[in-house]
Structures are given as structure tokens and as C-alpha cells.
Amino acid sequence: MIRLVQIEAKWTGGIDGGQLPVGCSRAGVFSLFASKARSHMLIFALCLSACAPTARLADDASAQFCASPLLAVDAAFDGGNFHRCEFLAADEVLIEIHPEDAPPINPSAWYSFRVTPAQSNTALAITLQVQDGPARYWPWVSADGEDWTRLPESQVQRGPEEGAMQIALPDVDAPLWVSAQELLQPDDYEDWYAALEARVPLQREQIGVSAQGRPLTVLRTEPRAEVVYLLGRQHPPEVTGALAMQHFVDAVFADTDLARAFRERFALVLLPLLNPDGVVEGYWRHNTGGVDLNRDWGPFTQPETQAVARLLDAMDALPMQPRLMLDFHSTQESRFYTQVAGELPGEQDFATVWLDRARARIPDFPFRHDALAPSAQQNTKNYFFRRYQIPAITYELGDDVPREAIASSAPVFAQEMMRTLLLQQGSHHLLGKHRRA
Image (cartoon, rainbow, N blue to C red; front, side):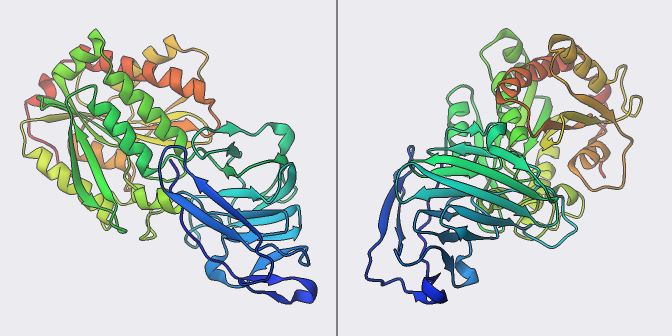
């Protein structure tokens, strides 16, 4: 879903650079937009002058909005973000993409904006220019902010400079969203939570709030002696990992013999949206405190990770033994970061057995199994491994994995995870107390 935000703008441009005030004599074009799935509306006034071949914003506060007599570009919706835009001609716009914080920062150059034509059958040439990184994400488009299509190669070209991307929109008839990945916002998660609650008994709880006051939600199944943790969306742009998590969880909550048997033995603790502020703000990597949350496991300096630390302390007081943690992410190619065989107690290497079983069922789905020794990096994987001595795995999906492949592969990984854990004996974990970092 898209939450639309009312904005105001002042313009410069016109003949010889003269100002075109908001109260200009020509009323321009008024467009009324409404999300298909919500009642929030935006009255978006475009003051377009016949004497101004291009228009440009006068102040930095409104830099995420610009217009020409033919088109307007804005980012006034949840997930929308770019640094600034400038029309170079009536049908040509430059959009600059900057990170939310100064480098060093992971070069995951998120962008999301909306193009609004003043008339039908309008063409637009877009140049994206990324600062401090490559143009990582191939553009997706949507007519309503909900149903998305990946642009064909005929309309997109990377380069010639690093960080540059050319996008051709030959026929814009109505507002069109253009985004680095599909928009998957907090309200979309709320809808998914409600759908899960309709399928299985769940406890939904707010464990804290983000820096901007958004709820941090945990969903828990009925208590059991053993528990599996599933986490997601620490990094805002990593939508393919979020989609994989949803399909994965849907399979675990399915009405099948396997899923029912799994839920009878194991409790599940879900933390699907750990960085809601970064998601809404359209950030590359960080939360609004300027921190990569997946480097804050141990220090716990941020309200988001602090809330999870309090949850873990409370869970440790219960007679429930952690058995597995999966943390869902995205990167350039699909891969699973696991512990090295032999680092964990027990008679078998869970990760190898699990991933080999899945690979045998989906041999055409390419992924890597990267077994790594624990490092000093303060990420979720290392923290859960040190605290509990359990398999703690980063589940990474490639940015460009076809969505049909995500939808078909994630249930297989979920099913084989359930089978592998059900075949394991829990006694070697249940004999001792929790290991703490």
C-alpha cells in the first residue's frame, strides 16, 4: 500500500530564470490520487506555466519534487526517496540518488519516485545518477503502487559512468511509480500479519518503538519446548529477502501434516520488520540513527535492536530452548551464510543437510552455501550463534531473482527446514542452560 503525503512547492524557472510563484495566474493541473487499497488521498497541485519550458525547485526542503509543463516527479509517499531532481528539458529529467548518511555505507542505492503527466501519451527520459555507489537496482514500475512490473531491457541502460542509469518511459498516460524494488511498507506487513492470524493461533505484541515511534512487532505461536527465530528487513531495500520470508512463513503456517507436526514441536518467534523507519524513509542501509542495525548486535545502541534484546532476555526466562535462527536479507546473488561444519554440538551439520535437501528438490534454483567461521562482526548471525550455540543463518536472496522463483523456492526451503529439524533429537540442546554472549 502507498501512503500519500501532501506537499507544497515553490518554483523557479520561466523566461530568463524569472520566478513563477505558486499563486500564478495559470492554475495549472490538479491531480487527485488515491491508493487502490486505502482511503488516504493526496491533492497534488502542479502550477505549470506555458511560458516556462522547464521548472525547478527553489529550496532544498522540497528537492524531492520537480516539474516541467509536461510532467512532474515526486517522492511524497512511504518508501519514496531521491536526493533531488531537475528537468533538463520538458521531457527529460535528472534524478540524483544519495545515501542517507556519508560513506562508509553499503552501496545499496534505493530510489522510488512517481511520474505524473499533465496529458496522456507523454514520453520521459530519466537519468539516474547515484552518488557513492553503482546503480544496483533495476527499475520496477507500477500504475498503483501495489502491482509491479520489471522494466524490460529495451527501456533501461546502465552507464556510461559508474552510478548512472538511463530509463525511457515512452508513453506515460497516468501517474506511474518507478522504484528500485517493489514497495513493501509497514501497512503491507499489517495486512500479512492479519492473514497469518486468520490461519494459526498467534500472539501479536509490540515489543517497542522505532526511533520515529513506529511499532516494532513480534508474532509468536503457542509456547513449545523448542523455539525457532525468524527475522527480517533490517536493511530497507532488501525486498527480495522480505518476499522470501513471507513465502517461507506461509509454508510453515500451512495446513499440512508436515507444518502441523512442526508447530506441535516448535514455537516460532517472528520479527519481520526490524527497521520500519528506514523502510518508510527509503534508506539505503541504516535506521534513522545512522546505524546499520545488522552491525548493532551486542552493542544494542539503537531502539530497534534494544527491543529485540529485551525480548530475548524475556524468552530466555521461559522453558523454551532456541534451536535455529534465520535472518532474511538480499544481495547480488542468492546465498546462505552458515557456521562451519563441526562448530555446533550434535551429530549432524544442520545447514548442510537442510540446504542439500532443498537443492535436490530445486536443482534449477542457483544459490551458494557459504560456511564461515564466526567473526568479530556484530551481526545477527554471529550474535545468535555465540549466545545460544545454535545454527544461525543469513538467508540471502539475489536482487534480481524472478518473483515466481522466490514464490516457488521459499516453500521448499521451509519444508526442508521443518523436516531436518523434526528429524533431529533435541536432547543435546535441552540438557544445558543457554549460552550467553
